[in-house]
Length: 235
Image (cartoon, rainbow, N blue to C red; front, side, top):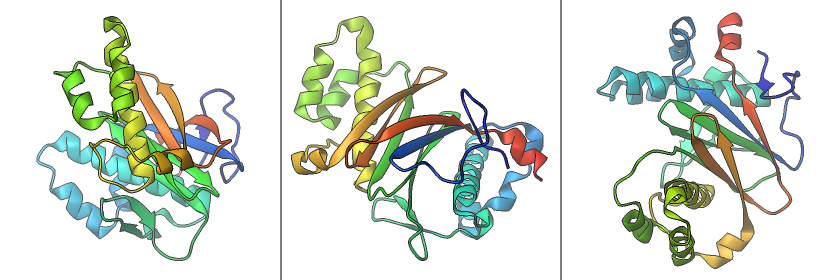
């Protein structure tokens, strides 16, 4: 399978380079011929989870997201995507079962777009993404979900910029929580843990903003694109 990035379209290495966090983005509505192939990669548990969706679009996006995660990790690890086993932390953060592979990962999605952050030599990694869209009482939500310094920062933005700033702050907060395996949608206000993590914001097409939180400093961020066409070509 060929994995490509946004700019050079070169053949990538089989692992993120040392000191690099790669963020792969994938559309969750792949072409129909490809979408019909994706269920084969899911585990029995994932098939059961897919079956709980009431609406077909939500179910298909879930299937695409799990297949994307399995195919990406299988590529980097040189393992069968179907054979990967996951365990889940108290708040649902996935990790690979079995011996340590030295590859950290985290998955997020918003509407029809998923992202997966991957890095080697990182003991805490979280990613979040959101599409900038109207939201009722963003400032009230911020007071409930953000630490006080983020609330003050949001209020300092002029009104035309405030909605985008809200989602940028939201993704930073969620990425920090996900890196530590904590419950989402609440304020991250642990200064000690905050010092241990570095934050890396990014933007994607379609008015999506996101952030990566990674343990340590000095990480480089690289954005890359997933091609469903190569999955179909590879059978």
